[in-house]
Length: 248
Image (tube, rainbow, N blue to C red; front, side, top):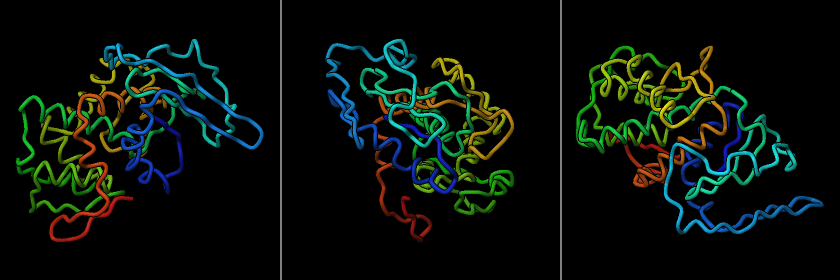
């Protein structure tokens, strides 16, 4: 699993492929070549390792925390999905603004609500004035319309729709504020000590921060517990409200 902080122009492209990329990192070794150097991480036997989503195993004690790969980013992490082993670390606990990658936690809570039977994919979700007013990445929800949970997930995963994620937050928790508290509670449960969520969509807000380490934790939790999320994150082109929705 790779995470790099980047500018807003690329954040939606990154969000669309973040979860997909993890599929290809679950092999035994990783090799990176640069102009004059070759970096190889040893093979890892993960066949008998039990899942522990609250921890990334081996932490940073066995990983050099530097920028030997000369990445143009403030923070980066590479982990092996099955074991959680950290393969590369660069400022992984630096607190930065996550932008729309915030939605990884929102999606995780949506999937938990579905799994617990609190909501279903066929439920009709209304749009409040608050949700419709979000701005940024959106599908321009209107207060007179409803979408199913399935359609909301599609819009969130493919188009990073702020209006849809707020509508889902309100539907699950009764208010965005209550849902954000759920996000912070889940972050605490997973051991995400670098993280404070102030909203469920990722628009810039003072104090809304996380780290690449914490994003790796919640992304691994989502992929390991709910691999069916790839049914949404791998969409290339689909329709919504008789229109066209494209992945970035």
